[in-house]
Length: 313
Ligand code: SF4
Ligand code: SF4
Image 1 (cartoon, helix red, strand yellow):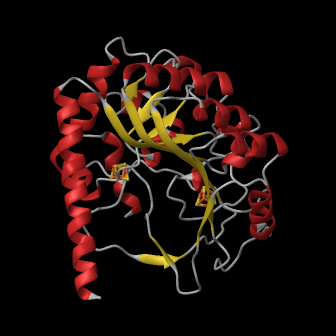
Image 2 (cartoon, rainbow, N blue to C red):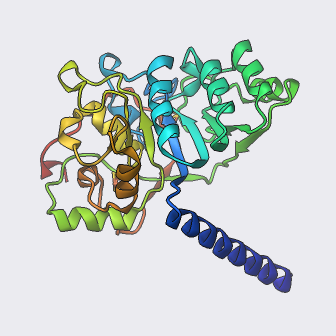
């Protein structure tokens, strides 16, 4: 058994080295390959987890972000034109099944030749509409990922996981359940507030985190005064950063994100992936400290507020 594991590890390492060599070579030839990003369709959710890593607990019904199909495909068109390949996209929310044009975005992504595969993550409280099931069935490179929040101590709405699985089985759609059990826990994201760290400390926080969840939003939900900052949407370092752009405004985070209307988009993408200073990282707790674990998906009725000062410590 030990020998088999060692051989598997050896093959994994060799495969990783080959992939690294392949993508480095492509980069030297001027190709831009993006490994992964998350496509945020909405900040609305059927649950309200008090420790949601995407900051849904900070959104008020009046300041929610939901893209339009026109807005999000315009943003994606810009990105697909500038790059050479994307390994994987994850469609997220909030809860993506709340997005009324989910079928259209599935069909759009399924036709992209530069995209290897994509998936949709759902919290298992809703079923797919018929149009979305047909769109999923027509794609060869999509999977549905179902989170299992049955271990949550205070869910306020029922999970529909079994019915959802039946739907997917009936339509031959590949899926994966992210099973948890009663002993499962989440990593505590802590309170989000501006800590007023120095630039060096913020860089340190980013380097300790290295969250590889680059996150794309259209320009919907941006205040009218800021519409021109990123008129076709933007790519952020992570879902916390993309949510902060709606909760605090885009202007505060200029320099953090890729403006998808940038006339030199390819160069900006390369710069972004080499960047280590993101003002959003000043809002997260000290990432170098040992992780604290908490019960999963505890629900709250409160709308949390993002503070400005260190008084919240
Ligand atoms: S289910 Fe919970 S963790 Fe997931 S997006 Fe909704 S609020 Fe956030
Ligand atoms: S804002 Fe920065 S520190 Fe916080 S999760 Fe995103 S990348 Fe990490």
